[in-house]
Length: 274
Image 1 (cartoon, helix red, strand yellow):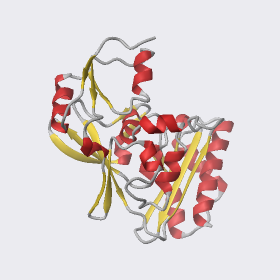
Image 2 (cartoon, rainbow, N blue to C red):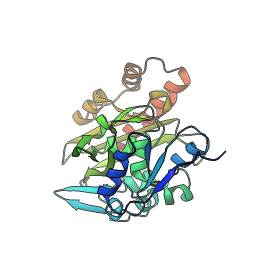
Image 3 (cartoon, rainbow, N blue to C red):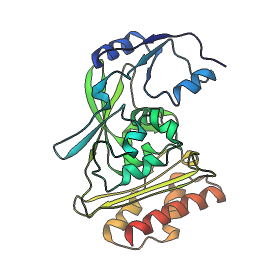
């Protein structure tokens, strides 16, 4: 199948893109890498009267540091992060996550902003960004605003962007040299979405402690504050505590789902605390 007819726009500036998005009155879509949107249009799982291609907006493809945080433009590709473009301030974590997303052909086109806005519950970047304490930078008809990654991810294929808004960048804190992290994913084959994902970050210098579990059975990423408290205190995290934390968030997990998510979390926590 092919996509229904649509108007194609390629704005020359962010303001022009926002104006086109507002003019679309909810029927316009932002096109970045197109690795999710275009197949969905072809399969008639999504519709758009207007596609706004932001591929020419240079500012959205930049990585820059200011005030101790790093701004990653929404149009930065998975491949660019895999290749360490712009430097590594996270002790290899973003490189590790990026290189395991689908296949290189997809990573060459897919973007971090597109992944976050698409909000697939089994995607990698929503989990990784929440684990790193990311802030989402948003532009829209009422100006610009910032939103914590926890507030940005709302539900399955649902994020906090309002009509006429677009994600412009992700702001991340640097990790200190003393920081430890682990990112674990279980899947049936290479390149597939993870059935279970766990990300753990502990930076004793900044006090950042994050334990995030995600993937489809959990409805997307979420923090586990009780497990974070144990890691911060240096206390052992028992398997029973991990299972209680998972059950508190999603009581309907079946035995298989509980096992793979608990195993992912246990391995990630053990790697960080060893």
